[in-house]
Length: 260
Image 1 (cartoon, rainbow, N blue to C red):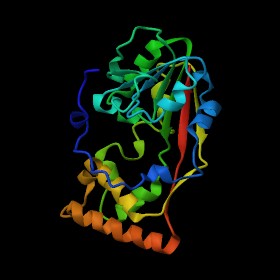
Image 2 (image 1 turned 90 degrees about the horizontal axis):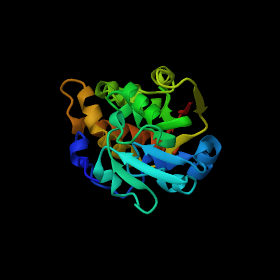
Image 3 (image 1 turned 90 degrees about the vertical axis):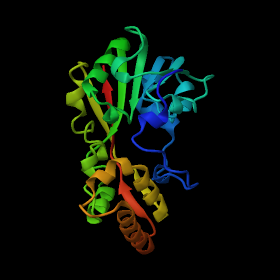
């Protein structure tokens, strides 16, 4: 596969595994990826598909059962190693300069990844280039309103979470995504998905998420506030919320851009 190592791609060393579920495993109601793909990404059926920026392959198993062929691309080779090569061709590459010929795929999936790309417009042009005539791009993202409860929690305890740049995915969101994609696609439609929330019963799951994003949040700490002290402030407040309400709840508001 070649390419860069995960440790070079990320801005910090990985947080040690805790054994606790991620906050995203606390989604209510639970989401069945197969049902999601069948309802909202029907063009996957029988198609030649590129999962661009696939990460460790969250969508690969469900997609591979629907597509005629599946290519999984990511910038970091380490993440691709978790994908079974029997179900997807693994390619290490940059979505801003895709290593494929023109008109190679029927469908490109960009699932919760475009807000991490330095040049989103360049990525959109490349995805358009590798799509066949009448091909479709599915771009999944979040609203600016998603997880506002977490943003306010961090702000109350001394952090400006937007200082790191990617928080709340403001670079590519429901609100601004159409403008970024319309330069490359004639038809851009947004489907908003607003019927889920994260119901997190263990305060330490929230702390795990904060620690995982330290590379984003630490730059926004109030002057003089050390990271361990900030984390402890957050922990105390979340514990109080969970003791009072049974869980820390965060609203979700996803958006799926369908582009042709």
